[in-house]
Length: 101
Image (cartoon, rainbow, N blue to C red; front, side, top):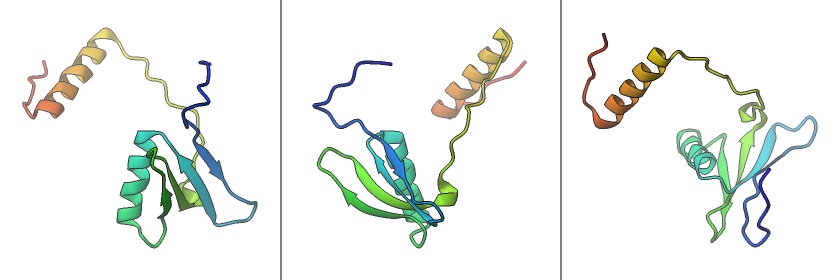
């Protein structure tokens, strides 16, 4: 673990009470905030952003079913598979199709 800087809010928190249908999420991590914003736009009846702070963090309410804690998948790729995925990624970013051999 890295050393914590208590002068900067870097905390992400998920909380809910037993048998509740809704969880409260407090987020500072950009990718999570972006995800919650998209969900709030797509599903305004289910996901609501309660508040936004000056530091960029947000508080939102989400259904419990949206909360998932799981072990990440680990991919064991050969060098050839890695190269192919890398080329595909570059192609997707640039919009230029690659020739796969």
